[in-house]
Length: 253
Image (cartoon, rainbow, N blue to C red; front, side, top):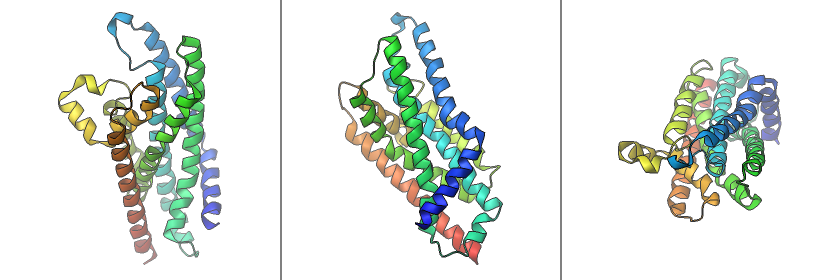
């Protein structure tokens, strides 16, 4: 109940910021439209498939989660900067209740974002003659859940370690990394070499690949993608919880 009350408060704070509508909801839709137009402008002879709506939809949905990370970090760091958390520490709430209070609204925001993204993708797919099925989109959204906790964990971690001015800078590094070497804008498998090695060592490539599996004819690599995404998500989220607890105890002293 305490976490629920704090989560409602956090949700209201997010919804008061117009940037949350622009980046978390509007930006993915704009990217979908732009990339779909680019896809139609690429000659068939080029053989490029990355901007095809079946690849683009889960990629954009994953990319949208990076902005959930951004707003998580800003919210946590803002609460620390304004000393709100320091005052709340006097309440009987436990560290885990604060963590849940930040996590729950972000998970809801991510879910809304995914529904809007895949809904728009279904419309675009219908218009371009490449329709997306419900039984493809739903498993893809489920496959994105470990990545939701990965990025929420990063957001809580950055928001705990740095102030609200530095947090967006750290998040922008991961946003760029997720976009470039996560395979959202280019086919990592076709590149090979050092780029592919680095990409496979990070969770972004695996998270994007896992989300795309329901749209592919084969499930090759499913176990690897799932294990790596879940392990990284649990590790980052667990680290964020540990750092938040440590910072909370230090602030109370």
